[in-house]
Amino acid sequence: MKSSLTFLVCIILLTFNSVVAQDDRTDRLGIGIGPSFMYGDNTGVHSKFNFKVLPAISVDYHKKLTPYFDLKGTLGWQMINSGDHYNQEQIDVIAAANLPHAFSGNVFYGDVMPIYHINPNLSGYIPSLIKVYTGLGLGYFFADRRDERIIPNDPRGRSETYDASDSGIYIPFRVGIFKELKSNADIGLESTFIYSPFGQLDGNDLQQKRIKADMLMQLQFYYRIYIGYKY
View (cartoon, rainbow, N blue to C red):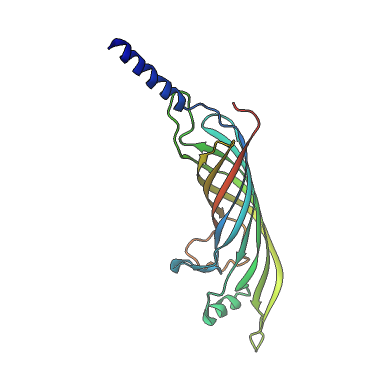
């Protein structure tokens, strides 16, 4: 009986040791793609969920600092387009301010942020199937657009298109989840909120929206590979 109990305890301990987590996260290089939209002065009626959903792509690099913290650098691109959501009365209000009522273009951005891992692998603990992280950082964007506005004082109300651009500092906030794969990689889902307090992403500062700042929202599916040595 005693030998059987000892054997059972050994089996349990061996099984436990096989699933105990190790702090073996490495530096990672990833690429993400997914849907996005823009919150601006002439980008739709957001209270009615009437806005353009367009693609966004980014690449990132995670530099491990501690079991709980990474330093993350991100470079990305998001397509932007105002869409056709306004009636003539609303367009006339924008035209009276000599501002564009429509646009299409691209936003290029780059940022750096510390990443906090909420449930990392720690020695002596059973690993979680899904890992969660979040971070807040600082970045710089460049918005390259083709704007459209009503020609000032034109009796026929004709419109003109012209090239325009804006740039500035933004504050990114991210929340992500990922699952480690056996192939020295992981897959994940990341939500990004880009807050632009100073730059005009859409070239329009008429302030017809409830929140004054322009914002980008993204939901990207990520694939990251491990690089460097395990710590």
